[in-house]
Image (cartoon, rainbow, N blue to C red; front, side, top):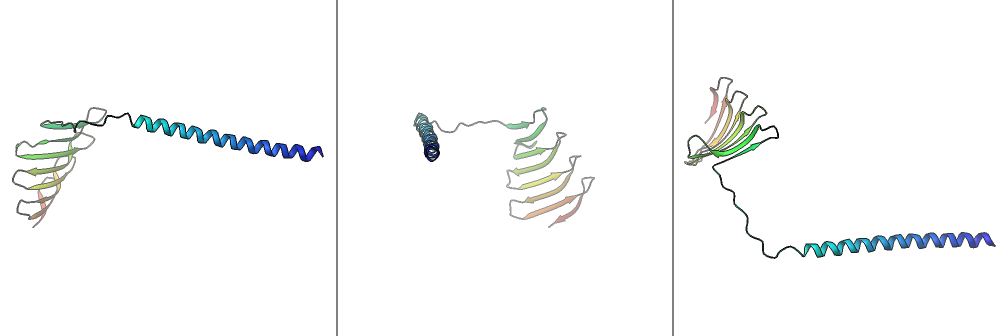
Length: 142
């Protein structure tokens, strides 16, 4: 008679401990949620507008100090140029938009020679060039 009573008491105690852990977990979750809501309400209602950063050129460098990308004006100040540089610091890809509306995407080899050029003239006429290792155009369309 002692055996069934002891096992039933053990089962009841285990069930009560599980319920107690569940209630503690839910209470902690509600407490953290309440604190999070209170903290989120502490931000100011009126935030100033976005800040503007202006420059004539932007340069992106890697941790070694090597130039990896640049955005600025070309040597001819009527064109905007975005260049992405390789590990050696030399430009490998260039996107250019000129003031006359002409735009182009150039992909260069390690010697900075244009190997592929995709572009659109101001008139809307597309153009494609393929260059050789000497930088000469070997194929173009149209």
